[in-house]
Length: 529
Image (cartoon, rainbow, N blue to C red):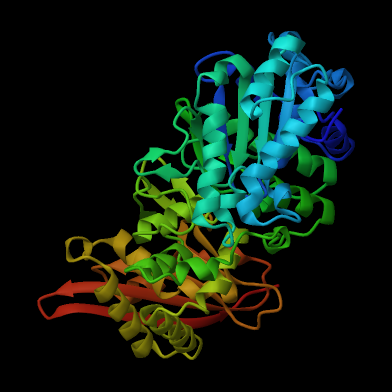
């Protein structure tokens, strides 16, 4: 049993001893690809979504170098028709590419991988010839053992993501992968390849640098969608086991949706769900995982509209994005769309395939955006943050005319004339004008009071000494009508038991012969505890 060739099942055994959610159904998907023209799979996903757990499971299941029956006999894969056909039937070649950078320079990566693999092949198969290159050694190992290999490559994209890895070193590394997986020996040596990382395979021009791979990503996960993260039912089971709120878990860590056949499925990041359940604390666990770079670095990039996009996203809006131009590396950005596409792969944004749009998925990631936006260097964004702070101050102080003027200014700047006279556009503008609310508030929309639905409610976070806000919007109607509707339909009842001050904020936009006019009315009420 070696480190890279038939490494054993200790990694997955350790995982099973912890709080393990059964994702072994992924193996049935891989089984269907073996020894077919779909044998090469690159399944990329964001950090905290269980990449390495999956890689350890795949290696333990297929390896002939260990007996993993006890680890899989109670899992879903054991009920699959392909289970017995493939368990412990292959030689496994397991590489954690990030681990190879310890103690060597980036330029030595490809040669170092080839050297250590050859050394272990000679140890595992001492009867094969020591002459020839790596691919010849692999062919001889298959011929003498009578078993093909399953290659499991974790963190495949580490050389692409590391800033000190030169272009020449990246080329040599990709050339090594091409030698193994883009030649006639592939079918002789490998029954299957499961490769995982954050980024999809780097493009060489408009094509993948290793074109034989089928790619599954945070954009288009395909049949791997249920195994990218945790599903609703799996999260409910975790919450029940630990006695924590599923609704809070959903609010904090859900928000990623993937097309799966004719339906959409909701997916949660695994790390944050398990940490929140274990600690019984709902907060951001993002920074504790060592994300590749800070969000601020990306949204500070000098592309037109990038700062504006960040503002809209933080306000809770969806924005369109073109994902086809991204080169799947961290240096070849050409447009703001490329940066947004990268943020999808890193898990900062959720992609809606049907709408070709992105949005911030949940509270956890929104907090990262809220922290980052104050450090953005774009002049327009700095101006909008200041403007937003002034708007909150005007609302708190009851300065109705000043608040109305700020709303009108944002409306004029942000809404296209084609859609200017539209209540939904007004709602989007209100959210954008208050987009820094996450510093102090939690935003809820369309809350049921029993007599109707309150448009937007901002609830103060714990320890924030600010009043709650209930915002009612009216298009081509009076602001008095907005306040009247709030009272008539008893919208403040949505916060029964809050026991603090609430500001009723009516905002209207009236289109008349005298021109476009925004009005604001603010009233303070006391809520019963």
